[in-house]
Length: 413
Ligand code: ADP
Image (cartoon, rainbow, N blue to C red; front, side, top):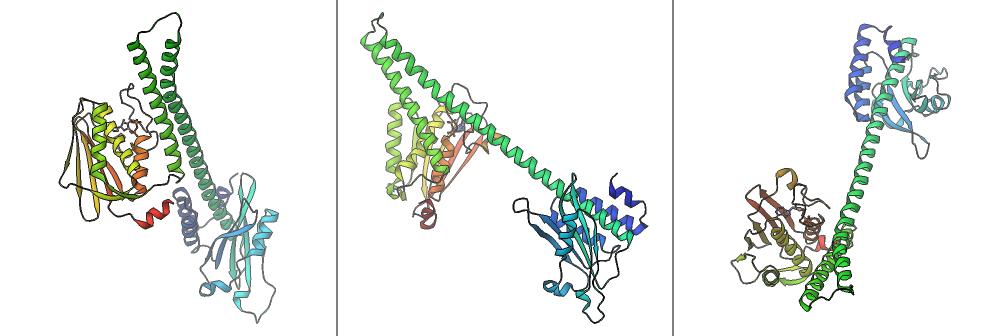
């Protein structure tokens, strides 16, 4: 039988009221400190004590340690000098039984040295996890009813502890499950992404090597170009994987130097126009030069990724790039007028491996690009954000400090 229900039958109305209020606290509170403070406050009018101390065994060191202590009655102004019932706690803990002790009779002694101790074992599933000790200075002795009430309180405190332990356990299990899911998604994505180009490379090279067929020069060139393209794709994916794991470990070093962002951007746009001859892309800038301190290779990697995403996910849409500057930052905005990204996905697109599930599945990608972009921008003490509207388009906004932020940059090294 549950000891708390056994005890409540003999309680007086005000005691019953306190007991009920304590049950409510237990049902609602998960924070052990808050719960105990409230329990002590509620118990005190019906059950006089000066100190309440909760001792719990540390699961690692196995030492019994005071985790919560309240001095409320006599001597609350001299907490440091009070006895906190360590001996009673150890006794309760070693026997697993209720412990009662009172001082040796000594008329002259200070009341604060005349401690009456009541130790209640804290039991979870038959195992002892600690002791709850109540202390009265100068008596009187704890009565049978008060011992019952203390037992009720101890049972309830145990319930708070047990509930908190379960909640932590569930949270840990959930985190483990998510991690396992992430790892398996990662392996599936990476294997798939590597297998596709590998399949083409293998297929076309085997085809070229067949001895029963003569391939014309132009066919051979076409097949070799496919092999070349697919090998590039594989190299890109492997580089992305390496960058992403280095960035995550904080080990991707940035080579800061003065750079003219506009110049690099124009070179990038020229290269893209050669690869995508139908591309409509325009840079709008008021100034000739936009100088800042940054790792040009990495910043261009970011811009290339965002523009290539616009080409992939907003095909046939014009792309507009704006450059602007105030006295501290350079801002770059890259906008397309494609299908856009819905709000529920927009908040995740900078996460590692996140791809919008409604994407056309034939569009290749690993979901690493924007994660890498964000990490690179953060390494420059900059900011990156995105705005998008379904059916209207997507705009990425980057802000980079003109001068290298020495503090943040130092963290990077
Ligand atoms: P990847 O392109 O390899 O999938 P990214 O991290 O670069 O990975 O992008 C994450 C996702 O964000 C993409 O899968 C895509 O769904 C979405 N996305 C990125 N840019 C755009 C864009 N301009 N328009 C629509 N969706 C986009």
